[in-house]
Image (tube, rainbow, N blue to C red; front, side):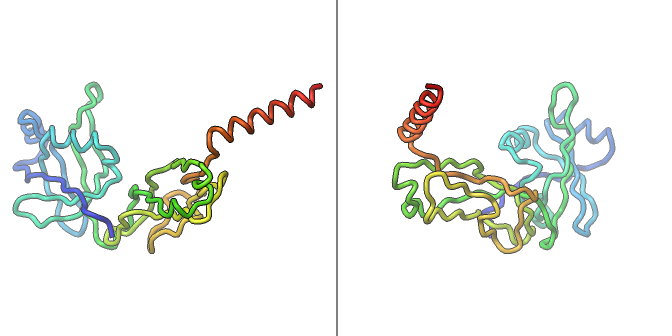
Length: 208
């Protein structure tokens, strides 16, 4: 299961339509709506600076939130759209969708590498190069993994770890079918330089 799901704090917006939305923006609020999940849509306001902070944190459109609205039960949501000003690029409206526990969604999950001391390649001075510290997976909203584990046991210099090499949490699968690279173990810089020198000498010998 995932660790703590971040809160997204909002308040019920009184009134609907363009007039209420404009009034919200004058008060440094961003209007929005939460819908789906078998319940009626609710018009919301989110504090502008608070929303900007969450947007700058990244992955806003693919991150699960615990929506907290006074007088309402907490509910898991994901953002489906952020309307922005075409000139200033500031947020004008936010669409949030409620999720059932059985809903399937795409989320970025942290990658955790273990057993560094059991990788011969690292013992020989190789370097673990993490190509992806997160992977996008399709998961069930009610059973989101906290991380994906990559076991480095037995890996040598030159070994490459692909997504298909990893045992994913039950119910999770990659959001794309391509067998993309997660990490590799590269040779020590000294060894790479020696290999390059050898290659250069072989080339010169061939020319001679």
